[in-house]
Length: 117
Image 1 (cartoon, rainbow, N blue to C red):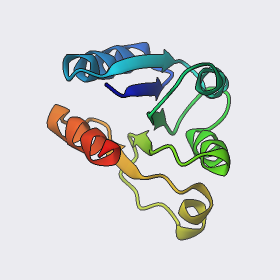
Image 2: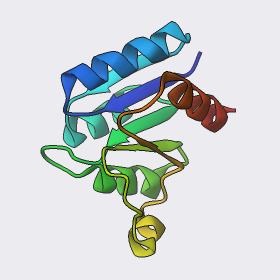
Image 3: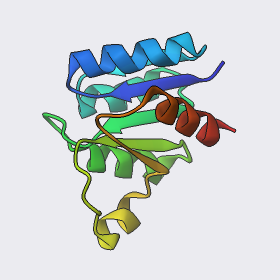
Image 4: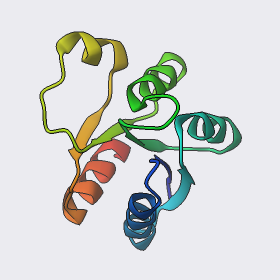
């Protein structure tokens, strides 16, 4: 089964998403900030990354940009912001999907499955 990395500074969110994904059969790694998340990408065989936009060290946008510079890994941006993102930022970052918090379990699982297909 694919391995997913969750990068979110909220431990409760990480635990909830991890449980949902593990129940669906995925292997899950977690990181509480962007720096740790990027390090885990080097240490583990990751198939998909879920990143919160608001991280305490490096923004989720920057983490996504760094991932996309060196790989084709699918990236889901997790955000509480329901605003439309400006095209310049999206063009430089290239996320594969967005999920707004709060989210539905089925939305998360369908998005993950679609990106891993």
